[in-house]
Image (cartoon, rainbow, N blue to C red):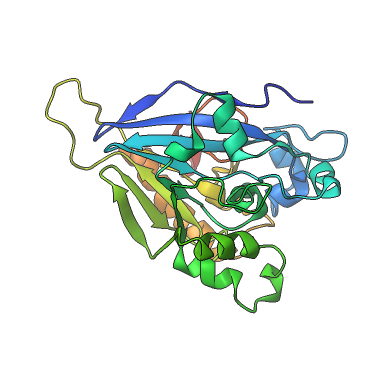
Length: 292
Ligand SMILES: [Zn+2]
């Protein structure tokens, strides 16, 4: 077993008195070829090594955000409803978000909003608990309307891939908040539809434009990328993964947002990065971008 299974990191504060902690909710090992998609092995293998089954050791990262008296959980991990065979192939250990929160002394019932970046198994699988009930009984689950529609759509590629059952159960419980585009949840925390990876993928923008008045109030901002950029290894904007449903859109939106992150000094949180976070992105002399 890879350890530690569950961890919570120290809080960082952002503009508008937003606090962010990374919750490590388990491990998973995506297939390196799929994860890096169009990128040849000689290039990606300079950054990370695959295991003996050709997989990468990655983590299931959640964010626990506190702002305006509300608690926002970003992502739900895999949950516990995968088959044993699937867990083995994908190297999933842990992954159940309510278990992860309790392990670090946080109460799942205290969560007001759950932001689901998109409806793939490793992000939306933990919307429900093992009994099929919402894992976060008092939360509204924030999903882009485009994503919910894609999950119910007729595109063959997507069928069986999206967590439709979880989506529908949360909708039936009255806890689904479908949003469109860029929406502020509380002051200093906004979701932003990016598309690219899936039709309705969303990122989370952290830190208010309206900063506090005291000299020691934080002024920094951050972004949680979802699977638009799953780890720091995938910052080169043309490095589309095989799991990106709309690669041309993914490249365009990455290029625009990565440039903003670099020029405005946003901190980055990655959903599958096993390393220390957050990190900053800078422009290189060759016109690309890299983590610093
Ligand atoms: Zn993912």
